[in-house]
Image 1 (tube, rainbow, N blue to C red):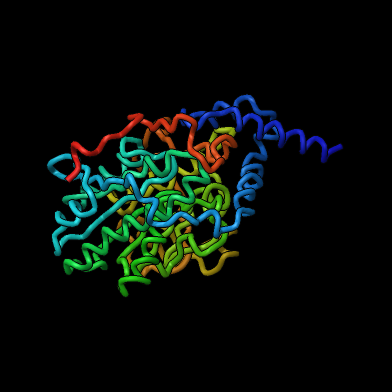
Image 2: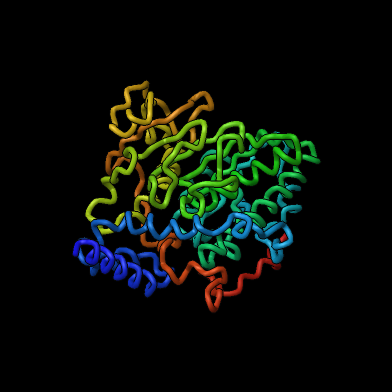
Length: 378
């Protein structure tokens, strides 16, 4: 009897998810309000079960798209004192000065250059740098999730070609810092792999903001610590939307392993809010380095028990490459700037209608249905 009740609850949850569209971003909150208590109380477990379906797809099939899939390409947006410009890789490379650090943000699934995550990160990073680059992933990531996952291959090849141009011009790739959120974290990692394999060089730094777990629970295509000289990972939706195990030189666990965040309290389904904490905290750390402080954990058990007793360490934007290991950050509500959650476009990862390999029927993109970058390209 209990098994049949669970099966019925799972069927109901999947049916509700299938009925939801990927936009608007508050769909999960609306679903949570009408779900039976059993389903909403176990929603994370249902999400984990749904994500396992992607792991059954052979990786050779899932990641079979090569660099030939680059057309029509993804522009690099350069933000600076003169505003925003959309550039080709050649145009962007021509504007990078040899003595400058190159900071580049790769958004995640259904993130756009105008959404809250991109605006917060770019705004914060511009307080530290004269220019910030953003890879406009809309044509590749504003699609069904499995299609978006397969698109990390052409996106990483595009970034690799950009870095290859810089390398040929004498620019030190050790001055590159890639920041990736969710799927974007794996684009960053795969780009780092291509650089090491083909240029005999190493990207200086990768910051991975809650790297996506669905389709990346295992395998060679996901981020790891060998992809850059220093890889920092901020885990905020541990084991659900984000990968749980340590992947970097420094792994920051926000409120522990599987812990809930006080900022997300009161939501019947909090995974979208949990996932967003990674970019929110990192943005805040660029403006105030003491907003993201954590203690080193001597072991996984100590992390699970939230009993980490190591020395307090600056994490996030100002994290030193000498910081190695696992770190526990305990958030205090109101300790960093608040961002408008309802402007996100990244969530509803497990809307079943978004899983096919094709894009949405109309492939209509947020903010503009047919983006035309030609009149701003250089």
